[in-house]
Length: 165
Image (cartoon, rainbow, N blue to C red):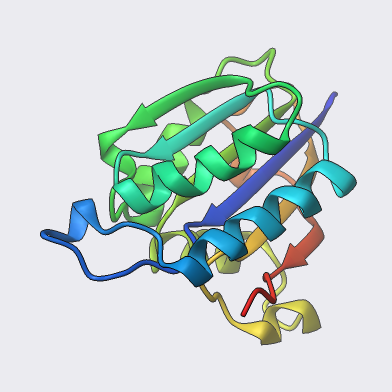
């Protein structure tokens, strides 16, 4: 068995836009994204695979992380992650090549929050923060492949919400 790390990141705060898909980050959202990027660099391994929604706010959130991380990893912009259901998110993660030790998913609520709730003990006090824009949940488990991650014994390693005002 090998250690796998799954990082689930909700995009940072966004402004209204010409369409929901094209909503850009707000100034506060840019600060949130920069703060979460610093937190990731200090606390977690650089992801070996990134799955990112094609929505502008998700791409801009990932861009802030990529600017801070030493290696941007193997990045895939996935239209299926735009407002994805938990099943769509799980299918994306399950399709990652087994050699990837860590995966970062940059997406949206309510799907990301539902995935976290399905994998983590619901009474974990860290979840009392809710799932605000820019939240990062980092999960670890022992598994040979990504396809079976939903049945793995998952530990919540970190739950971080940016403070950027």
